[in-house]
Length: 142
Image (cartoon, rainbow, N blue to C red; front, top):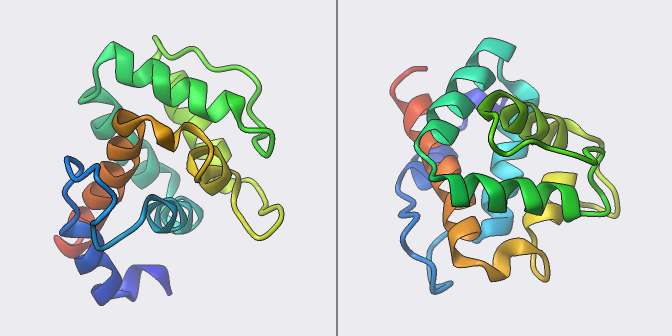
Protein backbone atom coordinates (compact mmCIF):
# COMPACT_ATOMS: atom_id res chain seq x y z
CA UNK A 1 0.00 0.00 0.00
CA UNK A 2 1.23 3.48 -0.85
CA UNK A 3 1.03 4.85 2.69
CA UNK A 4 3.26 2.06 4.05
CA UNK A 5 6.19 2.74 1.70
CA UNK A 6 8.46 4.41 4.26
CA UNK A 7 11.60 4.32 2.10
CA UNK A 8 9.82 6.03 -0.80
CA UNK A 9 8.37 8.70 1.50
CA UNK A 10 11.81 9.33 3.02
CA UNK A 11 13.28 9.79 -0.45
CA UNK A 12 10.56 12.29 -1.40
CA UNK A 13 10.83 14.14 1.92
CA UNK A 14 14.53 14.83 1.21
CA UNK A 15 13.76 16.61 -2.07
CA UNK A 16 14.97 20.16 -2.38
CA UNK A 17 12.70 22.08 -4.77
CA UNK A 18 15.52 24.56 -5.43
CA UNK A 19 17.55 21.84 -7.14
CA UNK A 20 16.56 22.72 -10.68
CA UNK A 21 19.72 21.61 -12.48
CA UNK A 22 18.52 18.05 -12.96
CA UNK A 23 21.09 16.26 -10.80
CA UNK A 24 18.73 15.52 -7.91
CA UNK A 25 17.99 12.06 -6.63
CA UNK A 26 14.39 12.05 -7.87
CA UNK A 27 13.37 13.18 -11.34
CA UNK A 28 10.31 15.37 -11.87
CA UNK A 29 8.69 12.43 -13.65
CA UNK A 30 9.21 10.26 -10.56
CA UNK A 31 7.83 13.09 -8.43
CA UNK A 32 4.77 13.25 -10.70
CA UNK A 33 4.24 9.49 -10.39
CA UNK A 34 4.58 9.75 -6.60
CA UNK A 35 2.05 12.59 -6.46
CA UNK A 36 -0.32 10.62 -8.70
CA UNK A 37 -0.07 7.63 -6.31
CA UNK A 38 -0.78 9.89 -3.34
CA UNK A 39 -3.77 11.55 -5.01
CA UNK A 40 -5.20 8.13 -5.87
CA UNK A 41 -4.82 6.73 -2.36
CA UNK A 42 -5.34 9.66 0.02
CA UNK A 43 -8.71 10.63 1.41
CA UNK A 44 -10.43 13.67 -0.13
CA UNK A 45 -9.72 15.59 3.10
CA UNK A 46 -6.01 14.76 3.01
CA UNK A 47 -5.73 15.73 -0.66
CA UNK A 48 -7.55 19.00 -0.07
CA UNK A 49 -5.34 19.93 2.89
CA UNK A 50 -2.01 19.17 1.20
CA UNK A 51 -3.01 21.06 -1.95
CA UNK A 52 -4.35 23.98 0.10
CA UNK A 53 -0.98 24.21 1.90
CA UNK A 54 0.98 23.79 -1.33
CA UNK A 55 -0.96 26.23 -3.49
CA UNK A 56 -1.22 28.73 -0.62
CA UNK A 57 2.56 29.03 -0.63
CA UNK A 58 2.79 29.79 -4.34
CA UNK A 59 3.11 33.20 -5.96
CA UNK A 60 0.43 34.28 -8.48
CA UNK A 61 2.97 33.69 -11.27
CA UNK A 62 3.65 30.15 -10.06
CA UNK A 63 -0.08 29.41 -9.86
CA UNK A 64 -0.54 30.68 -13.41
CA UNK A 65 2.32 28.54 -14.72
CA UNK A 66 0.93 25.46 -12.96
CA UNK A 67 -2.53 26.09 -14.43
CA UNK A 68 -1.01 26.57 -17.88
CA UNK A 69 0.95 23.31 -17.59
CA UNK A 70 -2.20 21.40 -16.66
CA UNK A 71 -4.38 22.86 -19.42
CA UNK A 72 -1.76 22.58 -22.18
CA UNK A 73 -1.27 18.85 -21.76
CA UNK A 74 -3.21 16.91 -24.41
CA UNK A 75 -3.52 13.92 -22.02
CA UNK A 76 -5.32 16.01 -19.42
CA UNK A 77 -9.08 15.94 -18.84
CA UNK A 78 -9.02 19.53 -17.54
CA UNK A 79 -9.59 22.09 -20.28
CA UNK A 80 -9.80 25.26 -18.20
CA UNK A 81 -8.51 26.38 -14.81
CA UNK A 82 -8.77 29.67 -12.97
CA UNK A 83 -5.29 30.03 -11.50
CA UNK A 84 -6.46 32.98 -9.38
CA UNK A 85 -8.83 30.66 -7.46
CA UNK A 86 -6.78 28.28 -5.27
CA UNK A 87 -9.75 25.90 -4.95
CA UNK A 88 -10.19 25.67 -8.73
CA UNK A 89 -6.46 25.08 -9.20
CA UNK A 90 -6.45 22.38 -6.51
CA UNK A 91 -9.47 20.72 -8.13
CA UNK A 92 -7.78 20.78 -11.56
CA UNK A 93 -4.58 19.32 -10.08
CA UNK A 94 -6.53 16.55 -8.34
CA UNK A 95 -8.56 15.66 -11.45
CA UNK A 96 -5.37 15.56 -13.51
CA UNK A 97 -3.61 13.34 -10.98
CA UNK A 98 -6.54 10.93 -10.75
CA UNK A 99 -7.26 10.58 -14.47
CA UNK A 100 -6.49 7.23 -16.12
CA UNK A 101 -3.02 6.66 -17.55
CA UNK A 102 -2.46 7.03 -21.27
CA UNK A 103 0.58 5.62 -23.06
CA UNK A 104 1.97 4.41 -19.74
CA UNK A 105 1.85 7.84 -18.07
CA UNK A 106 -0.66 9.55 -15.85
CA UNK A 107 -1.92 12.88 -17.22
CA UNK A 108 0.01 14.54 -14.37
CA UNK A 109 3.25 12.97 -15.58
CA UNK A 110 2.44 14.01 -19.16
CA UNK A 111 1.58 17.58 -18.12
CA UNK A 112 4.84 18.03 -16.28
CA UNK A 113 6.99 15.57 -18.24
CA UNK A 114 9.93 16.14 -20.53
CA UNK A 115 9.05 18.41 -23.41
CA UNK A 116 6.18 19.87 -21.44
CA UNK A 117 6.21 22.66 -18.92
CA UNK A 118 9.26 21.21 -17.16
CA UNK A 119 11.45 23.37 -19.32
CA UNK A 120 10.34 26.05 -16.84
CA UNK A 121 12.46 25.63 -13.67
CA UNK A 122 9.78 27.22 -11.49
CA UNK A 123 7.15 24.65 -12.52
CA UNK A 124 9.66 21.81 -12.11
CA UNK A 125 10.60 23.02 -8.64
CA UNK A 126 6.94 23.24 -7.69
CA UNK A 127 6.24 19.66 -8.72
CA UNK A 128 9.26 18.37 -6.83
CA UNK A 129 8.36 20.58 -3.85
CA UNK A 130 4.87 19.08 -3.63
CA UNK A 131 6.33 15.56 -3.64
CA UNK A 132 8.61 16.66 -0.78
CA UNK A 133 5.65 18.05 1.18
CA UNK A 134 3.70 14.83 0.74
CA UNK A 135 6.67 12.69 1.77
CA UNK A 136 7.26 14.81 4.89
CA UNK A 137 3.57 14.71 5.83
CA UNK A 138 3.40 10.94 5.48
CA UNK A 139 6.55 10.43 7.56
CA UNK A 140 5.06 12.57 10.33
CA UNK A 141 2.17 10.16 10.47
CA UNK A 142 -0.31 12.17 8.46
